[in-house]
Amino acid sequence: MIKKLTGIIRKKPWLSILAIIYMAAMIAVSIPKSMDITEDSDYWAFWQGGKDFADKHELNYTEESKREFFYPPFAAFILQPLHLIPLKLSALIFFLINALILLPLAIYLIYSILRLIGVDARKAELTLILATLFTLKYFWNNLVMFQVNFILFDVMLIGFYYLARKKPHIAGIMFTIITFFKIIPGFLAAYVFLFHFSRRVFISMLLTVVICLTLPAAFRGIDLWVQDHVNQYENMLKPYILKGRIVADQANHSLKAGLVKTFHPESRTDEHVYPEHYPVTVRIISILQLLLLVILLVNGFILYRRKVYFSLAYLASILLFTHLVSGITWTAHMVTLMFCILPVLLIDVKTLKKPGKIAFYIFIAFMVFLGIEGSDTVGEKIYLCIRFYDVYTYLLIGLFLFCSWVVWSRRSDRIYPEGILI
Image 1 (cartoon, rainbow, N blue to C red):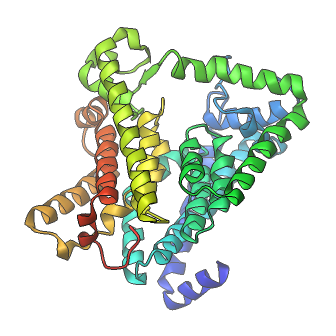
Image 2: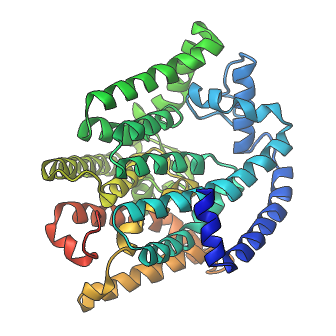
């Protein structure tokens, strides 16, 4: 990787100047941001979660006076090194790792994936530049909120990279690991297990499950390890899975949150909406979620019967589906759009008829608008309208339907350059 990057910089020396400016800007931003970390911040929950795990204290799932720890116990096990450094210095290092290592790594992985599936170098570069620019907003939100989503995204991309290289057992390992960090990536692990099943995949994923379960238990002891899982289920999973809690926050873009906010204005900014409050709407949403799942499964079987080993559009549709069915899809979670919009950006515009070209450029303009919109740029009313009627939710739905169409319709091949494994 280092040799390739060195070669690129030699061919395009302006990249090194851009990299220096970017590094200087990130260092300048990181210092004041990390100094603002308090016990009410997400990063404090990560730092304290790792500390509580190491000290064999109960993980904070219920203490509302401080930021609660939302993740499975395995996540606390992984986060242990954070507390070895003072909080603010740890936050500074975490910020710079996200900005200076994880973003370039994501760009490199996506470029490698595009080249592996047959995209020529120039098209891959242009597509990646646009994908990065259009999604910098989500990366920035993830960065300044000191979230872990980009770390998980990079691990996903490593999995996608090995799928493109026809090594599903390694992809299965990657997806299984992050499933123990956040449960929702389990859909990716299930995809590999169902549609790329082999003895090697089974053994690799099973061993990963065993390791992810036993490592925390070995450090914490069985009793505390069991209590960790019970607490996480009672305080985090049960409210969303069994009770159906809906967080109708303006920054939550899941299907339930988006539609409830759209059709029930009085629910907006209410973090404790339940199915009994809007039974008809929630029932319709549940049917829509089931329909999305059926589309996902049917497309998976279509690819399986066609013996298509790797599909960029199908993987994007899985990610979009997870955002839509998740209990919470914060703006920072949408860093995955850097990958999910690739099937649109890879379209050969010359093959489109006039309506198709208009639709394509409207999408481009829309992504540019979303990238710059904010209360300071478009005004408070438009800013709130976008979130109260949740334009982001409908963006996810639209991309999911488009990616699904790309998978099942053989006609979709006509809009892409020949030979691309879209």
